[in-house]
Image (tube, rainbow, N blue to C red):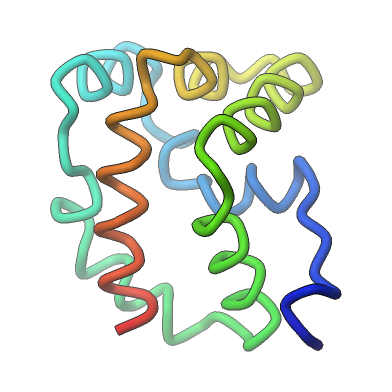
Length: 113
């Protein structure tokens, strides 16, 4: 499967950002406002998770991480409307962009080094 054949859906984004949607929304809001590096805090879990990903899952995760953050946040907004998960609403807010950029950069270091 080539990179251009991978279509990213709201479900792909939700799955890729699953870690963030499991966090209580009050904590996520605080971490977003402080621009916290959550990936560093969960590095060992991510490394363990990486070993269980198929090549297709890795390709989808990479595609999500390569998306422009604005496009990613638009998908997050749509996913919020569909699921009602407050965490998705928090992440879709333009103020969350620096937090997303930081954590995607850190996740790439773990998943694609």
